Length: 316
Image 1 (cartoon, rainbow, N blue to C red):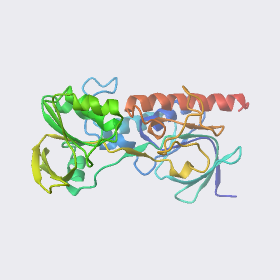
Image 2 (cartoon, rainbow, N blue to C red):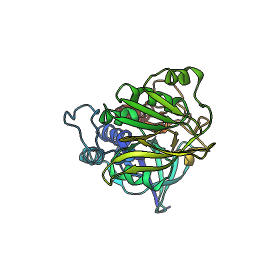
Image 3 (tube, one colour):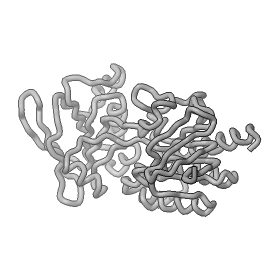
Image 4 (cartoon, helix red, strand yellow):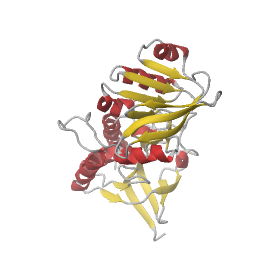
């Protein structure tokens, strides 16, 4: 029993959702403990420039913003720990969680803010320019502004890919959409929207061979037609990947209601409640629609307030 730690509020995962939840929970005297997860700071740590978060008129880099959020959470005495939760048991009133160092934590409330990971093609050239912050992105709404007046390429065939291509078409001179098969997976209405946009060119049966660049940024994409075998280079400065996200929710699957793609289902719309009393969700682990830092932060606030009210109702 000596290795069991009892906490009022355990926050699983960092990023804008987790840190905002921590700030609110700490200020409500819940003494939150946070495990930062596999990617401390979340997806924003891979984002070079954040220009659309309110309060930063000159923009800020993603990693810098996460450092500031972490410092703010620590200012209110959040116990922030490097490491991750490997297993949970939400079958009883006390929520049991196990950390990667073997520690067993019994939490009165749990806030899940584990986020979602963008899927990429896995090409070495793609990963190179993603890490450099030089032209590869998985979020057109976040990064499209940097490519206004330029030519871009987007990979994907679903509704999200079509939405992002249409969004880019309003900023960029030309958008080339690469679809692996001979038709879209998107709904008919979304597919028609991109087909009817004059500056979107759609290439079906097309795979990406390599993301081309000059060492500093993307200059084009080498693509191959899977039917004819023909290869060609498409000039572009931005290469967007819209082939989906995977929510980081596997460890909760036995207890928390998930949708068919693994996103956590809200028990009640407009709240952070899950199907398990005392367990709340914030950020991209439940959000497949917006996926923005500001919306994640908003739901982090909601989760902390819902957790505080849950404890208050129990007389804690």
